[in-house]
Image (cartoon, rainbow, N blue to C red; front, side, top):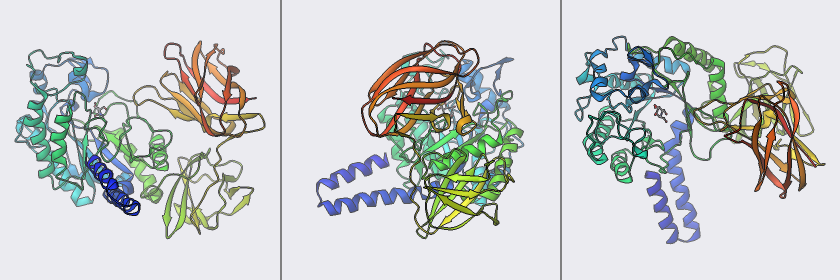
Length: 583
Ligand code: FHN
């Protein structure tokens, strides 16, 4: 909302000023926002903590395993309010040690923590005068864990944010719930409904005031799920937040208010976003602790994900769901330690970096920094070259030095060939997860894009040049291998779209071919610009086959994209190696 007010201010100012002063005023607003975001952009990596009463049932209710994310158990198992409340009687996280949590986050290289102060179940994990349904008044534990966390964060120099579920509050007669927008009743018929504003004025606004006043000043207020929210309700909460102009808020108070940053959930946008963004991600599937959720991402996946996000200019907020005793689950601790080990040697290539200047790097990612007007490039090599040469496409620049970040004495020789830089890479793989090679240059680097060009009648678009548009929740397609051997695997969710950027210098009619494996008849749409072709793929008997997807007219020159969008009704399991356009 702050941002909206600033924008409105700028627009009115623009109408009353000369062209030169207009530019100055606009820059001033941007500068102010830049200043506000500075620590957050520098940080790149934070810890999300989902902790509440739901940690106790941990995904099971009355002996039955309840599907879905564990913090939703009250809704998913339709637990009546009074019954759910009883969880508070047993909630006694005696092993909770705020300093241990903060120290581990710090070791992992995280610069900030965001913790659930109240999730959708309505239970406040902080002392609240506004509602007795809080951890100090309603449990044996009787301590305020968020106060302890705030103190520990101050002590160890970690920024702190609170998550607050402002709309959904399943405990209150005026709170919203997951299908309120479809006119469905709350699952607990005994909860006699009241207007939303009763809850907003009676609980949400007073509690938000409490969290903003009582914890030494928060760095972030992280709203969640504006389901059933009205502008009036959002404005009442925004007015409270506005009292803290340095505090950052996300984009989830009310749609389409942008907040200070946007929050892709459970997926990484294939290319960066043009507004500050933070991916929130679980280490397994559930946000809250779920005792039998063993779907853990590997340390390697998480390290590469952090790097991937930084290389696109975003932040990662990585989640842990502590147990009812107040401990981080062992697999989370292992992963944080593994990330920490990598960060101890390589964090310089993450903190304060900006997005990669390259179009695609088949062997990994790149992050950059400007120092004294010169560019430092951090090459994150996921697949160490077997050829002994690391090709950096389109980079012709004056180089000061090239060395290994974890051991700057390890220097690398280099040469230029045509438009590319080649770094002589020894056969030793320094770090199988991600070796960071630093290029210090003597200027501000400009890169010639290695975007494929459609010329001389054809273009081949390999799997590792595709942008995979995965949905937040669902089965994600992923890339394996690189170059000619790269494959997009696990393309089973029909919401996953593949897209390739290319440059066309030759308009005309093109045949579309693909090297693909499909286990049943699959239909998809191929789109280039405003042209669209519907295609059908026959099963390929468990092997890759070259299949024709029809013909398409390319009428424009310059940068274009080709998209493959599955037909939701007709899709199976697909793997893809490339798409080729042939005149
Ligand atoms: O419903 C919540 C969910 O439980 C979790 O808190 C995530 C975290 O971003 N937010 C909502 C779903 O978008």
